[in-house]
Length: 552
Image 1 (spheres, rainbow, N blue to C red):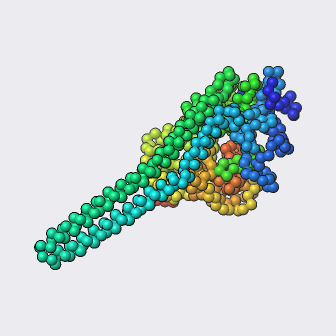
Image 2 (cartoon, rainbow, N blue to C red; image 1 turned 90 degrees about the vertical axis):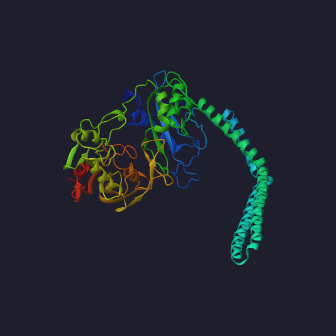
């Protein structure tokens, strides 16, 4: 039996096992997973095995780094239930801690090939650094710069002298007789010859200075190229050695899984570590869950103790191999949640329409589900031209969407959106009480490349995103608000609500940035635009079901 297999401390005899393993990318934690996670969290609150600043104690020193932790409920060959613990990346600058499964491949192990090759690369770095700081090398750089500067100065002076001489000779030709022209022409030729010789002189000295410098730069470039090749070879060796097991004891490396180009940090998440260890020690996976522990990071939305799915970019290809032939819960992304829902038309004329999209209903066809607002209105208006859907709402967001019945109307309405002439109002129920009554949120957003479609706050590469908000009313630990988006970024309102630099209060039912509920309590309830034909200003309002119910 594995020495990291931990039996449950709590009595679990009355809890039935899940019929299938957890679908890692969207799940409600099984009761056994919640118990295992609670026991890990109790350990984290009381442990003295390591020191790591999670940002939960204001008096603790050191860099604040929150961390994803994972648990895997497993069954051993005796039928006993227990669990394994893991953390993503490193913890307290180490890959190894008591009670936690190790990394799949430990690059930090002292006698590993990685450490040996890393030492060689460090020698290259030292050699390059020594050459780059060599006195003669720096002097040769300075000599070349001074030679070029002096050459430019003297050649420019000679050109100015020629220009001035030409001007003087032009005036002389007007005043002097014909016989003086020969002397003036001779002066012009001599100045030109001098410029040519001067240019040749300085080109020779510049070339000599460059050759002197090249004696050093060639050595440096050669070392850099050797270092690059060794680094590339080390990386490929690492990708080949970093291999993951599945239930059939089949090994598949990072290089094979990602076709030689895995993203940074692939394989370091908790889920692959847990499953690899389970298969290594013949433990049957039953259920799993991952949660965030510590202060929220600056970019992502991560709440202390909250459960999160495995990341798609790094983990999905790895887990596809590791969970091969293991029956899992249904993939919700393949389920058409709009199948039994109706698309209500709330306004229509010969040119356009407004539909009230239910929650969990795609605006346009997805990769795995085609039923959508677009598909429905395409059947409804078969003779319509153009893209039909003028703007989109998140699948989980309900509310008003503009439909254009011709490409011309679509172009006009899209132009109004681009010029920010269309005004939209959303109503949202937030999971917490806001202290302020109104304000503006200005947080630039971009997609999380490792975990699409999630968005993160990014001041370097993010697109501008601004939202005005105001409180409608406060209820039992909840706040009803209006959102007025100035920009229209993906998940803008959801991130601006949940992020600690925004309202720090997720929308109720936000399964990406908050906690899942019966639905996402976000509704696009009002839209104002100029009719493309009549030029009349039109405002349409449709209240949210959660808003009207709670008001009554």
